[in-house]
Image 1 (cartoon, rainbow, N blue to C red):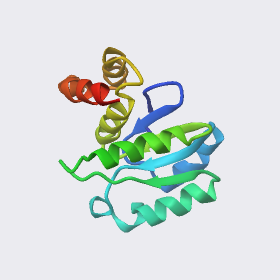
Image 2: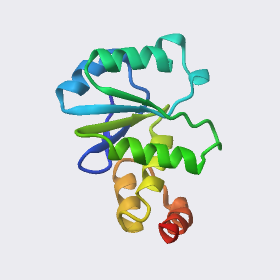
Image 3: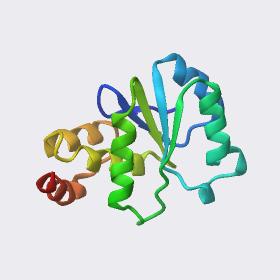
Image 4: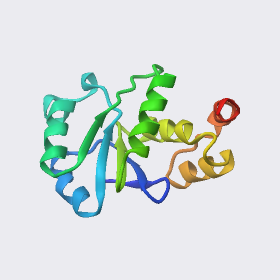
Length: 142
């Protein structure tokens, strides 16, 4: 399991395994967000299987899949809502963690300075400097 913290409560990760859920719950994680569509994973890692493992470990599961270039404002808002609703830690995952980091960065637009958002993702291993114009545009809307 490769958790990459973005802030005090939110981390992103490449694909998680159902067997990771007990460990995550024991560390204070209370919400798992899946940003990976079922079409990308085998049945053992599809949303229903992951949700069952997450809930069995006592955490909440949010399914907010983003495929390829299909990122939407609705996806960004769903990610922000899931993060905001969490009492403890949140871990969002996809294939590499990049989609989850992008969703977090765009969800934080207007809440944090763009430089801080981009520094957090860079430190986590995701250079999202190319998102600066989108972050600025979202910041102006909020």
